[in-house]
Length: 343
Image (cartoon, rainbow, N blue to C red):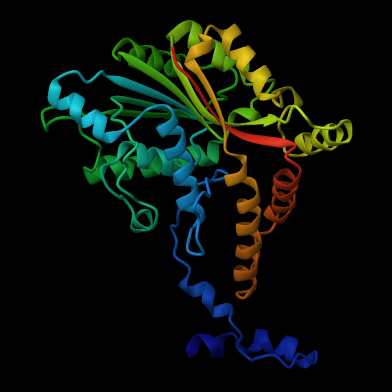
């Protein structure tokens, strides 16, 4: 009640203007919002979503869908450990965000209380001996670094077959993933050491590669040529049936969202470029999951905006994204695809 009294003067301002609404309203709901909160940020995988599906849950499910398409399974991993056939692995995660997906991939259990809201059995998580994250966003890199320090202190790091196994190595770098030839020596040495001590190397680009400038291909070509790495991603393609008008509109939108037009190729062109990079045609899969991404994401954003407005808040600039995703879903001009290219 004291909080209400402290804020009474502020509320009088709009009451004098003739507003007949409640004296206190619902804005005190902000005091119950929990911080820190989940910081996942990708388009999400909304297949079988319900009214209770959260953004963080859908984001986690997009990562799971990519891992499943790449053939990762905790059950298979455990069987290989027991049989003594497990291969050591490293993961280069380009555009890792604020660290939630790093925690999911590299921790045995939730680290923060907010992690429990989206945690599951990690059935598609492999055990990576080396994890290297690269992101251009310095603010997100620092936030994620703090999260990883919490993970290391907590003692919840994902282990292998026994307590005697070495603790996995996790390293995060604030570098431009699109420009591998410009990476600093520390990052290059870290990747070289990880790949030298791993039997399998994977590069992950979860809803990030279409932002890479001048294009996604320098880093994909580099990892295949130098590290013989396999590649898995959720990425965006242009529909092969897009009309001239749709292409013009899309080109304008991509400029506004900071995504080079060169990245919006058709799935067929994407496959061709992967083959040119050195991957075998029969080792490449491109799976279209657009129907379970764009329209349901636009719906979620609209509903979330309504929920926030009851507290005097909104989704802000994401309202523009809601409109764009809705158009993509209706028109089919952009396709959301899971890419897997094995070495």
